[in-house]
Image (cartoon, rainbow, N blue to C red):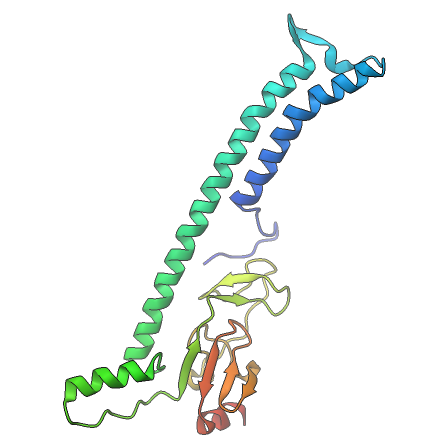
Length: 215
């Protein structure tokens, strides 16, 4: 679990890559342009001073900016790749958690398909009534911090940006099946339809369960 520190959230590789790439491009392109501009208006340019024979300062700065820009591009590419891998892992873990919750009867992801599978297995027997009272209609993929509004991965207890501790419920009936958030903070959309206040999953909660949660 990623913890918030007094130093705050470190910049991502994508951000650092963009900064380095921009810095390298500015150094490479701005140095000769500034030198040419100063010379054109007959102002003595320090950028024309030769630190090495045949290598004026503006040329050395242009050369120096190239590896900085390339390093930034590689860092940016690596950051994007890691983010894609992370999203894939989070999605896979998310699907696994949902499957486990469905097997335990805590949620129902697709009642129609589940009923068809049970009917095919039991033949003419009626499908058993699901014990779940909370059905996931659309699942959130991250937790949105109610304090700063930044995203945090599912499963975290604190905001990775500001350190705010998320309000979660230890009572299964009051916990969001996706993020564990306290359903007392859920917003009602219409009859039996609610939205979790943390992960914004859309949940269908029957009247009896809603009464036990909100009263």
